[in-house]
Image (cartoon, rainbow, N blue to C red; front, side, top):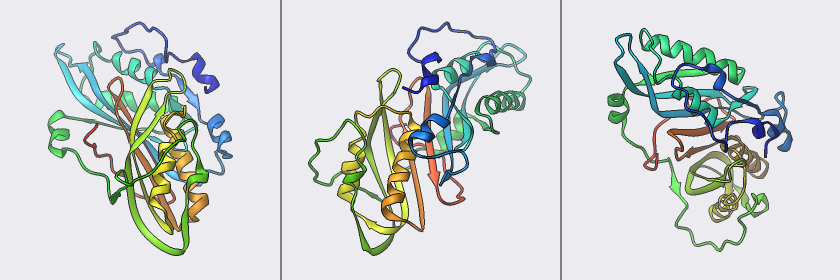
Length: 276
């Protein structure tokens, strides 16, 4: 377990506070998990963002009439802190009986509080249900590898030694799998996700990638660190010219978390998958 997470509200009974309380946000430093991966804030080999989508966002108009909407929050991948997910939900719940003059005022408040917790500016968009409904759901790019016939016996820890590639062939491709699963390091509850890999480098053996993804199945870690581990293991193997790894996780408690890590400065999408 991350040492800071022991003091978070995750896995503990919590009072429902329905009026604005920014102190509910609980930041967790990224440094300990970076150190596990051999990284520091100065040596991160990727750029990226963590997209959080809130499907239970509500507040009051000055008239007292409630509003519901969907919130999109983008937290930089190099921010000093992640925000513990239950504390994030409790904080958002504290808006439920709080009046705001208009949507812009709420967005400004969210940006201020979340940026303070993350340690870097956090992007905030409040979106109407009609707007999000019009977008629908999308499919991940490239080839789905889930129908490959593999034998699996490793579930407890990620196994990068399973990964194979053909260094004699350089390819540019996108592949994805919906078989990513890991466990919350605090509550041991399952986290379900889909993961996409886009790269140009030595040809990755698809069956070995699927075996590797399945090896996360009983692994305990936060969403962000799972994606960072996949990125680093593929980078070491493929020595790619470019690499992007991202995961779209199924929501829990009205929140989904979607980490993106890339060697490139890319305009990253935040489109829902069918399971989201």
